[in-house]
Image (cartoon, rainbow, N blue to C red; front, side, top):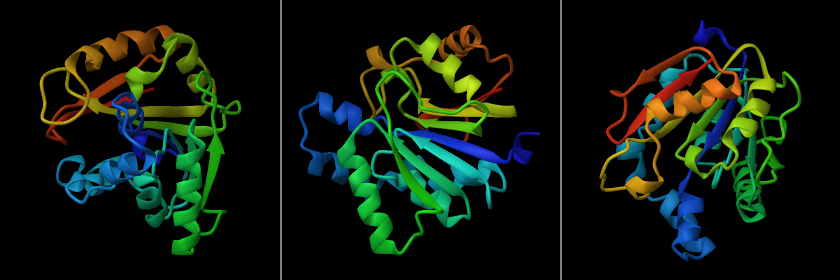
Length: 209
């Protein structure tokens, strides 16, 4: 059923937020997000493959950062909205899009407030978050809005770090386990869940419907 979804949101990338907490400059954050070795553990090709066919679907990349996943998803034929709270990242995504000759019809940016995913009612069919769930405040209200923005049979995918010591990612004290996230999303109105803890070395993949 999940592979038949028509539209996707990708809600991604905790690293810009975490880097800001560590006092890094914007240039340093971009370098960290785009570092060549990231693919060795983030495994973006395998992540995209796990989503199933995405050609022609609409993807909302909320918390897009540098557009690490936005451009990969667009390359696979998806229609992408790259959304972020930081104007600098949106400007970066727009500049890269233009440099690569990607049409704005296929990849557009959207500015977000910190407390609202800015989804119209039943606008999309999937939310895909990478490493950013724990940065959201008032999560029950926030994800209730996300739920309202999903079409019928729409679902969310959350990729986040295992709640243990790892060579990358935020401190354990900032992390939430898949079980903790499921409890919170249940309060926001989600009712069905599936967890894949084998796909990636440092992260779990949580599907919520």
